[in-house]
Image 1 (cartoon, rainbow, N blue to C red):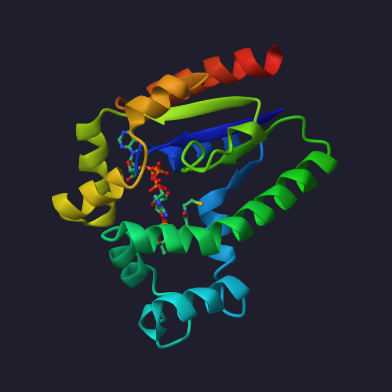
Image 2 (tube, protein in one colour; image 1 turned 30 degrees about the vertical axis):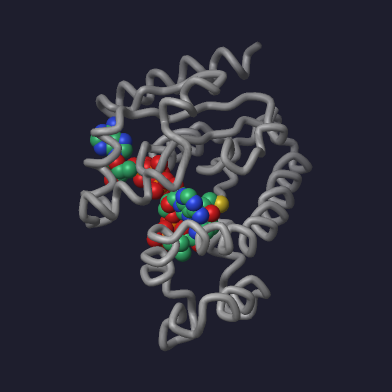
Length: 197
Ligand SMILES: CC(C)(COP(=O)(O)OP(=O)(O)OC[C@H]1O[C@@H](n2cnc3c(N)ncnc32)[C@H](O)[C@@H]1O)[C@@H](O)C(=O)NCCC(=O)NCCS
Ligand SMILES: Nc1ncnc2c1ncn2[C@@H]1O[C@H](COP(=O)(O)OP(=O)(O)OP(=O)(O)O)[C@@H](O)[C@H]1O
């Protein structure tokens, strides 16, 4: 079975995906895939430089994530341009990884994809699990983790479908606004139900 794990920026997907890995279930992570496909020498990086200019490279020739992030989260047209370059390569990379785990005999594989709904990838998975927190907690955790101003954090949150909408479309959701232990308990109940079913 393939399970899609999603949520909003800083809602706690990585926190939950760590717990899933601890339970010996492989997780294929879209954010990691998105880093791999823009490494130096990859065609996507060349395409990004052609579109956004040399100023999005560091002196070492790697992608300057901070500079590109500042641009795309304050400019929707540029964000959509970047998505069009990076997403096809991310999808290929992820599918290869999922297939490799399945060929190794893993009956359950989790796909951690922040933009699962926005990119219409729900057909890839049999179940969707959303990691939810209320707006105010999402904003607070994002500002703290990434050292962003309120305005910068709000721009990033608004580049995605709202967490309420994602929660309403989910097969199951975890409320990650309390302790890590409470999140873990909810995760175990859901996995137990889905995997034993
Ligand atoms: C703009 C980039 C360079 C900024 O890098 P940075 O290291 O600061 O952030 P990171 O990649 O860790 O992403 C953090 C979170 O931002 C959100 N996010 C990232 N890209 C996007 C996007 N294009 N649209 C909406 N949300 C996004 C996701 O929730 C993600 O988990 C990077 O996010 C990127 O290459 N984005 C395009 C690829 C993409 O869509 N990735 C998201 C999943 S495929
Ligand atoms: N239950 C919790 N209680 C307190 N802090 C938490 C909890 N869950 C996560 N956090 C913190 O909130 C921040 C966001 O969590 P995490 O990095 O897991 O989110 P994410 O959804 O993976 O984010 P992104 O979409 O940006 O990759 C982190 O700093 C994390 O340590």
